[in-house]
Image (cartoon, rainbow, N blue to C red):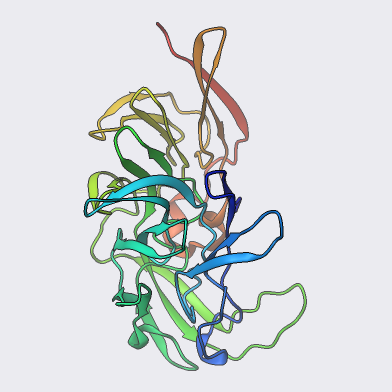
Length: 317
């Protein structure tokens, strides 16, 4: 995923993927820089600092979700922060000046991570780590509490808006060997429903000052659409039903819904102005990680039209 540049600290922030093979017992240690956020000096290419979201990852919880710049006040203290809803199921606020953790709070049902250590890092649940011939069941799934779908931040409401996936998985270690161009996993896996949630998807609003949920809009199908927050107090995002939604940023109330645009939506909408008139545009089109990896959970959407059209709406008045 695309990195983020911060002109105030002259730093480029970039996420790093998970290590391979997936089976953690084959590569003991923290596996430095995997599942991490890197702070890079763009003038030299040197790493200023790094923050590792998941050490010795065995669940495919890579750290590549786009980091978002935000000014955060936590427990009365202001910070220049990076915020991210990570694959491992925790919502993070990190001091972008020094890489120290401000807070990390779970935003989905999570049994892989048991909490955050005094040193500011996720504590892996060793009982829920697969091994050779050892199968485990854990949450969230390897697609994460959030995958690459774009989140959004509104500084006026002081909230982040997160497209969320509620699913779990089984995993089992198997022997593997490296072959160029082929998957290097060392694990078999299957996605399963989350026993705490009958709904696969939701849109969440998270208070940046606490990391806690303010409102949530739940859906039976996964919510894979990117989010866009606007200065007018609206949040736009598309659903698997092919409709573009306009939410009240403060309350989550649906204020507007488009007609079905012909296929599910995973792209993030954009908003722009031409000659004093405001527009909202979005690509409809189905694909990405859900139809590739969801297995039986994805059966209801196997015949969804793939689409691939640009739709533009104008705001009246």
